Length: 336
Ligand code: NAD
Ligand code: WQD
Image 1 (cartoon, rainbow, N blue to C red):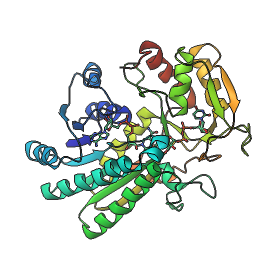
Image 2: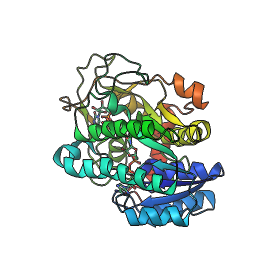
Image 3: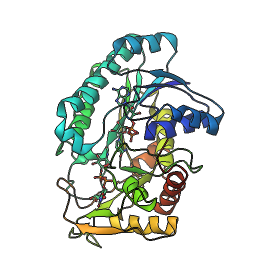
C-alpha cells in the first residue's frame, strides 16, 4: 500500500516512515523542508535499507499535489505537514492559518480530484484546551483553545468533519497526540528543533548535552503532586505505530474516526528531569520559574478507545523515552 506522507521528513513523520517500511507499507514523502533536513532520508535508508520517494514541495502547491497523485498510485494520506510552535503562532497567526488550515484544504481538494478517500490527520490534545477533568476521552469537549496553533488544529478538525459529512465515502481519522517525545532506539533519528526548543524534553536533552545551562521549570505551584505540570508523554515509536494501527483498522472504513494517542499516564516536569538524569548519568540543572502563560496544570489521555478499536497501545515508559532521547542527543549533539 502506497501512502502519501506530508511532512514525512519531520520528527514524527520520519519515525512513522521507518515503521511503515518495516510493516511493508510504501511511504511517498512530500515536505518543503521548512523544519527538517534532507539528511533524514539517508537515516531512513540506514535503518530500513529503503529510501522513500521524496518530493520537495509545499502542500499549498496544487501543481505538485496533482503531480504526485498522477505519478504515484496513492491509497491513503497521512498528513503531518504544518507549523507547530505555540509561541510563534501568537506572533504569526496568518502563517499558521495559511499553512495548517489552508494547506490542509488544498491537500484534501487535490485528494478528492484524484479520488483518494483515506486521510489520517495529525491533531493534538491541545484541541481539548483546559479540560474540566482528566483523563481526557474523545468525547471531552473541544474548541476552548488559547492560541492560534491550537485553534488551527481545532479548525482543521471541524473542516474535516464537514468534508467527511458531505463525502460519506471518505475515511478521515483524527489522531489527537498527547506529548510526543523520545527517538528511534538506534540513536540515529530524533527530534532536531531549530533554535531554542519550545518543548520540555528537547530542552532537557540540550541541557544534558551542555548546549544550554539550565532548564527553567515553569511553575511549581500547580495543584499536582509535586506542584509542576503533568503531561502524558508518549514515545514517538509508539506514536508511529499508532498511525499504522489506524490505517489498518479504519483507513478503509468510511466515516470520521477520532482517537487519542497517549499512554494514559501523567508525569510531572520534575519526574521527567529525574528520568533524564538517570538516563544520562548526571544531574540536570534547573531553576524554578513562574508559570508559562497559557499552560494547564495537568493533562493525560483515556486511551481505551484506541486500545479497543485500533488494537494499539503504547509500550514504552518514561525511562525508555529518556534513554532513547539521550542516545540520539549524545550521538548527534547538534542534530542532523
Ligand atoms: P515537524 O516540524 O518536525 O514536522 C513537520 C514537517 O512538515 C517538517 O518536516 C516541515 O518541513 C514540514 N512542513 C511544514 N509545512 C509544510 C508545508 N506547507 N508543506 C510541506 N511540508 C511542510 O513536526 P512534528 O513534531 O513531526 O509534528 C508533525 C505534526 O504533528 C504536525 O502537524 C504537528 O502539529 C502535529 N503534532 C505535533 C506534536 C508535537 O509535540 N510534536 C503534538 C501534537 C501534534
Ligand atoms: C510540557 C510541560 C511546561 C518547557 C505543547 C503544545 C501542544 C503539543 C505538545 C503540538 C509543561 C513544562 C516546558 C520548559 C518547562 N504540541 N516546561 N520548561 O505545553 O504540554 O504541549 O507541545 O501539538 O499543542 O502546547 O508541552 O513540552 O512545552 O511542556 O517547565 O522549558 O513542561 O510548563 O508543564 P505542552 P511542553
